[in-house]
Figure 1 (cartoon, one colour):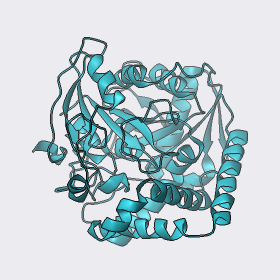
Figure 2 (cartoon, one colour):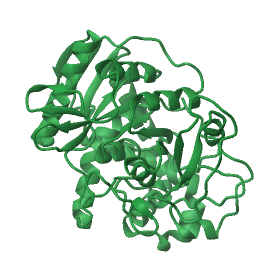
Figure 3 (cartoon, rainbow, N blue to C red):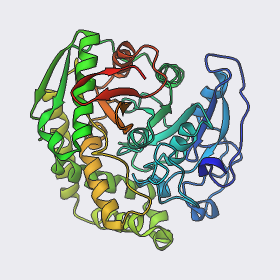
Figure 4 (cartoon, rainbow, N blue to C red):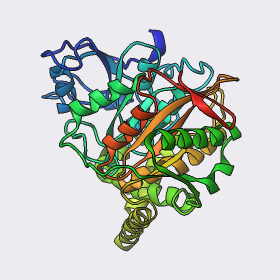
Length: 408
């Protein structure tokens, strides 16, 4: 099937009413409950050990009520616990921007469906970057909203304190419409006044990625009339934060899925199985260690709030460079995973929203994603900034080395 993006047993759903999304199609990650359907969770063993859902997840019902139709249920990486895009069922979903590279994951199928033009909107989940990384890899707009801004009822859990429903589109105005349909409450009204670039971590990314971050920050600051600065934020975008996230996430994965994982770990892909076994070991450690990591998590959140208060947006890389090759070795994939989490983990640990905007180098055609990391409740302001920068955006913005962006 084109794109290799649809999960086994995929289905379509007609809209249940007219609305702002009438005529739009949606690819739904096969982790959302559909009445009468057994979600794949990216693994045949899950389907074998679970029955069909009794009711449809509210996220899907809201989309259908707003006029959208479901084009299909999309593949995902095994139990949504990968950021590569390679660990699900069958052939890995196609990345049309880079056919020889992965889409990134775990919302790999949703991203592929949108990037291939098989759906207008991709609905996925983001725990450690699983919407943001595919958006950057496939040249899409992608939003991880404030944690809890979109209800997760009827969504299979991985690590609930970090799990967030996210949105992928080719067009930014459509993403804003989908968010309006799905979010619970109106969010905050704090305006953005300052944009900061974490200059000290840009040495770890490709020169073009670093240049894209700076160009986007300058362009948005100019269009929005915001102050722009470069600061040292290495304590936020750090390997220590990645390790802290991994430990806390693993314990919550074991809380949510431990019984099933213990019985089925040998059926998992080697890398996912290794993470499951580590989660089991962490779950068996003294409660004092868990409490210490939770205190460190709280302290990290407080420290991030002090450096990036409400009204301040961090403009940062999403991936260090291009997504990994489909021929990459396990060691290369692990290096990619570690490097990517340095940029995606801050939003996950703090529950902050992050919007990914695609850019394309005007000379060499290289497609990259730039992240706008806001404050809790600042989702609409991130969209406002991006829309003001490019009000008619229907795809990646072009940039040249050390030159202002040009509309795509």
